Image (cartoon, rainbow, N blue to C red; front, side, top):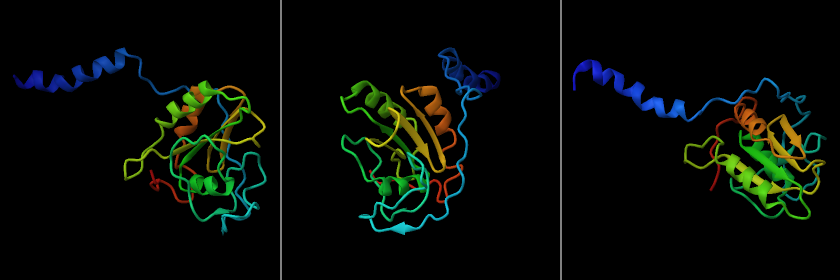
Length: 176
């Protein structure tokens, strides 16, 4: 192949991606403010219920010394544990659907697939039910949250663009 054609090859390979409309989300209409820093972010025993920063859902503060495996759960998980996941830069997606909402869970699990991966190749996000959140859906990072009664994939993708930005222990791998 002549040198000029070889140079054009990478551009030709990118053309189908551009044609498919793969673009960065427009995050200009989403507010994802940083909450105040927690007064403390120490490790507690995992039986403690005195965790978090006083927000609902909590996005920082005192937390358990262990983390959750990064996967989709169908039972509620200890908030003190997933707060530690947030400290490591993991995303946590919560849902509150007492009557069940398989469509919401499927969408959140699909968005979980878009989270960053750790050095071990494991996605760094958790999906779990939480009956205490005031809305149907919450997407969390350390000191950031997005809550709504419907899943907005663009909003969650905008939040994921901030993954690791504010976490005290960013980019840590998650156990499978």
